[in-house]
Image (tube, rainbow, N blue to C red):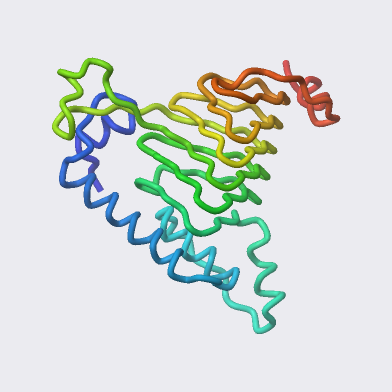
Length: 218
């Protein structure tokens, strides 16, 4: 399928118009998919994964169902756990690694790519804001003006405390922890704790994993 020039500009992190009919339809699709997860109340693990893939636009085939519930659940050990409710703009610009957990009330504004590495734990009410507006109010021009986005990248094995906010263009390095209620405005180096508004480095995390990363570095 050919991507429109406006949508390509969005994905490239350039000024684009978010109220173009094409993008309104895509956000409505995602909103409906998120609502289906909310309406499921207490879905089986299989159904939970199926509903997430619907949000994410993942069309890969589901494994054949096994007769024993525990065995069937085990088929999805590596799939992310996405708790309801969740709020996402497009869904198709989100990449979650294996064993990621998104706790309830996670918000992801995925104007551009938002990637979250394997085994990362995201507490309740955490937000990833990949979108921004021009500072010049004349250019901003309400809903008629352009918007812009930047990618957000989270490494493997991170932990986000409840209520944390990650702003556009931020990279959070592997193994890092973001304190509850923090606002992350700039990159976080691997294996560090950050907290506050704006988030500042509190300390380095000593872990055998960090030493492994150092040994692997060129």
